[in-house]
Image (tube, rainbow, N blue to C red):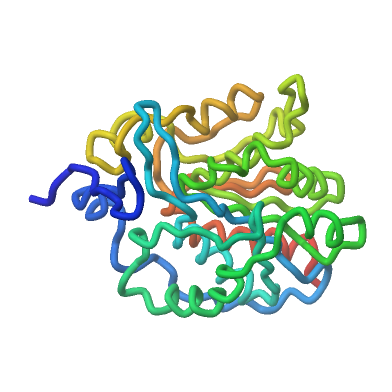
Length: 284
């Protein structure tokens, strides 16, 4: 039987990858992506702003670190659908440094996902600095149709407290553009709260990775090496958002122009939902 002990990261002191057992449970060799045969959406803004984390190490309560980043399936599958529908994708990180990926979560036998990764790799390695996009690329006439934030535990690092993420999401809300996110990515939504903690998204319904797994099973099977310092669904609920799911089933949801999914299992469905929603908004 595969070990449930987290695997030491040789690149950093006191940091760990998920256990072999947990990867066997969570990382299938292929995804449920079965093609993206979308007619191009020719109306409206033409680009998707993908905001990825540039952080690798998540500090835990006991002082250890989880070696994380952006989840590859959660990043690539939604973008594959959006690209197939005719959108250009532009990658940004808070610092402008390369986007970090949980390469241990890559579906090793999924050729479509591999091809999408290779196509986006130049941008992933040399993304734009989000502050530059905010300064020069956002406004009422911006050519971005949506802001997309993928999951992976890395989405809880540097994104929820970034003033540039707040500016990008505020712009999307002010200009009736879409916000697309899943799994731990909805941590980004915490950025739109004001100084008193009141969120612009109070009352919105969202799907998000279940806290019960992050404080329970994910630790028990060695996916996480310890307890997280804070939990995404708990914090969103505290800001007045309504979390719809308490399990990981692949659920997706649209509330106005906020599109969310609960986990990697929702990646393909969220891509499909995103194309449908954008077509309804901008299709001829």
